[in-house]
Amino acid sequence: MDPIYLMNNVFIIVCFTLVLLMQGGFILLEAGSTRMKNAGHIAGKTIFTVGVASIVFWAVGYGFIYGEGNAFIGLSDFFFGDFTSEVDGLAGSTDFMFQLAFAAIALTIAFGGFAERAKLTAYVVFAIAFSAIVYPVVAHWIWGDGWLADLGKQDFAGSTVVHLTGAMAALAATIILKPRIGKFNKDGSPNDLAGHNQVYTALGVLVLWVGWFGFNAGSTLGVDGAFFGYVALNTQLAAAAGAIAAMFIVWALSGKADIPTTLNGALAGLVAITASCAFVAPWAAVVIGVIGGLIVYASMKFFEKMQIDDPIFALSVHGIAGIWGTISTGFFATPELAAMNGGEAGLFYGGGLTQLGVQTIGVVSSGLFAFVLSFIILKVMVTIMGGIRVSEEEELIGLDMAEHGSYGYPENMPTEENKAPGA
Image 1 (cartoon, rainbow, N blue to C red):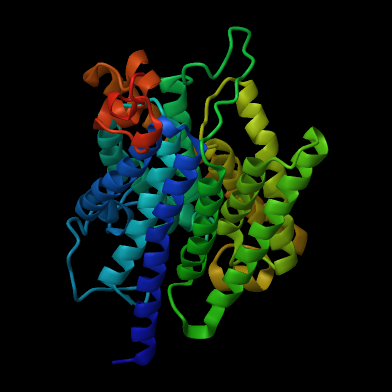
Image 2: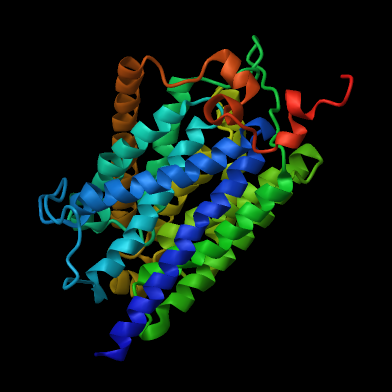
């Protein structure tokens, strides 16, 4: 057997493992960014919904993306299990595993809009719907044989497919669920419902940062030519630039080097470079990361002013930065890299407005589709399930106890068992 074929498959399974481990980063990030009374719930529902997504993606999701069909959706390869197939120089099962990890990340991003107020049943039902139809349709348009792929849409590792799709679903959820109790005052001014553990949040970002090399570099789908090293370089530069830019902008404007903003800047740089990592020069990766770090701070302030309660900042980090990252190739894609990886050169390299127009069409169409379909699904769920938000009493005591019967931090919570003698 061809040794390069074997090495490619080993490489992609390692990258799959890195992307799967990003779920651990999201657990730490989301738990640390929310309150102690919901920490166990956030950790547990992440594991459970990754399980749901895996089964649904195996049954129908992969087929809707990569199956033979039409410009809108694939219509074959359901209940995937052909051990003899090959896809893009990989064993079909290897490709399936890698694509599954991406679908699960998109779902976890979407659930950022549910945080601290949604019923567990809402997570289960939406996980099925999102993994079965919302994510696969957008992925088919861009990565399958869809109409955006035919136009030459550039999205190397998923700024649109994964991050924007997940963020638009999160936006639909935040609108329908409405803000958490106590987030906004009657005059619209916000209160800071601070997360309980910034160390967890920082560690979560670091785990995600490491996992992103599986995400981006793995999207080269092999070791032949070692192009994955170039993609990794751009990924590192953008993340670093995003963290620095976000820290300095919040420091300059508020007088404090706010830690959550710095962390979100690093993530925004990662999200932004995800589409463009294979299309741009390293200097452009730095610029893309800097702009990502700046706009994530502005976006966080904007959504809060609009009274949209986004505890995990999914809309800013994954949505706005995902839009910028996708659009950026229309400016910075070099002729050589565009020729290698698809599409046309960017505006700054003499490519005119062609690729910029394609990128814009892709962002608008994919974002609207993900938002509208997610909104409809959630509205139907509200009607059929009698609501998807926990009661006021359950929200106040926390979802750890309300949905699971125990706290993630039982020794620190007010229960009968841990009261002091005579209390």
